[in-house]
Amino acid sequence: MQVFDYDDVQLIPNKCIIESRREADTSVTLGARKFKLPLVAANMETVIDESLATWFASNDYFYVMHRFKPTERLNFVADMHAKDLFASISVGITKTEYQLIDDLAAKNLVPEYITIDVAHGHSEFVIAMIHYIKEKLPATFLIVGNLGTPQAVKEIEAAGADATKIGIGPGKACITKLKTGFGTGGWQLAALKWCAKGATKPIIADGGIRENGDIAKSIRFGATMVMIGSRLAGHLESPGEVVEENNKKYKKYWGSASAVQKGSSHNVEGRQLLVPYRGPITDTLTEIKEDLQSSISYAGGKDLSAIRTVDYVILHS
Ligand SMILES: NC(=O)C1=CN([C@@H]2O[C@H](COP(=O)(O)OP(=O)(O)OC[C@H]3O[C@@H](n4cnc5c(N)ncnc54)[C@H](OP(=O)(O)O)[C@@H]3O)[C@@H](O)[C@H]2O)C=CC1
Ligand SMILES: Nc1nc2c(ncn2[C@@H]2O[C@H](COP(=O)(O)O)[C@@H](O)[C@H]2O)c(=O)[nH]1
Figure 1 (cartoon, rainbow, N blue to C red):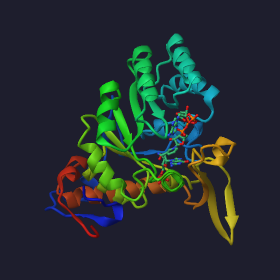
Figure 2 (tube, rainbow, N blue to C red):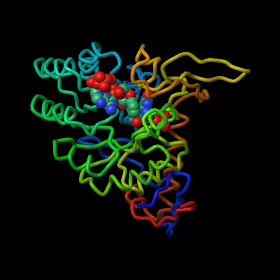
Figure 3 (cartoon, helix red, strand yellow):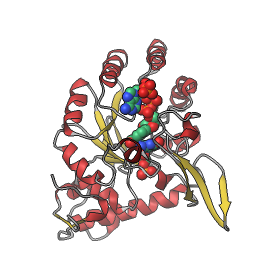
Figure 4 (cartoon, helix red, strand yellow):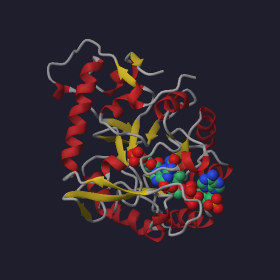
């Protein structure tokens, strides 16, 4: 297998067939819904909260609420539905998570999307949770992560997942590679290409997006969407206070497996860092949209599908 990451690849242009980049369509369908951009903010406590989730849903962006306020998830689903918005939550795989699925089913509160969010998604216990959710909430679109091999993608799809999420350790707050020796950190794009060989359903590439062009590269190598943490964490609307250091503004960003998140030092695979403050999220989303429209024009098409087949070079293989 050829090993490479985002910085090692450049996509090769095709003849342009649109008069203006504004004609390029960046929308994507996931499940029953169409979204404006092929990206989703990471389901992390420093990246999304209830109010940002509401904003994303109201403005036709996909979102996945985090699972770190476990007892608030049922009300969250009810609140979103009361506002006539889609509900998209995360669950783990421990015993108490089964109770949440039971409670949602008993109240006929059916989230449009559920993401099973664990570090090592290729697991018997994840498969058991997939079966349980599919039995109790069959109408829910089920995303399962995180995975790092085509064999994992095949097994998790076969168990009933409607989409898989790829990336073990490429995240900015991640220390999995250092702590365990495992993962796709440093070769996430090649891992995505490899995993896509095992996929028949949508893939979300998760972690390691540092530049807007990395979104187009992810699509080229098999992603339907990308999940972004650090690059979306520093906005005005992001959870948490602005921090000032040396006359520069930042926001705190911490890993979901960090000691800060866990409140303990056991099985820590994440760290806390400061990310630059970026102002309103709409500015960033507009920039990403415009850059993706340019990507589509370089790909020689009118929508994201054109990017999937472009040629590419690997610069440092
Ligand atoms: N994308 C990535 O690379 C990573 C992401 N994360 C994020 O951190 C958060 C916490 O993740 P996670 O540690 O799964 O959280 P959880 O504490 O929810 O662990 C999931 C469950 O699986 C068990 N488990 C057994 N083996 C493993 C293993 N190798 N890795 C993880 N769990 C295992 C855990 O038990 P026990 O704790 O007793 O072992 C626990 O019951 C999640 O949001 C996850 O997405 C974390 C690490 C890597
Ligand atoms: N290994 C760890 N990975 C983590 C942790 N918390 C979150 N994550 C993953 O990172 C991405 C976001 O990556 P970024 O490069 O865009 O910042 C997120 O979606 C998770 O998959 C963690 O504590 N350890």
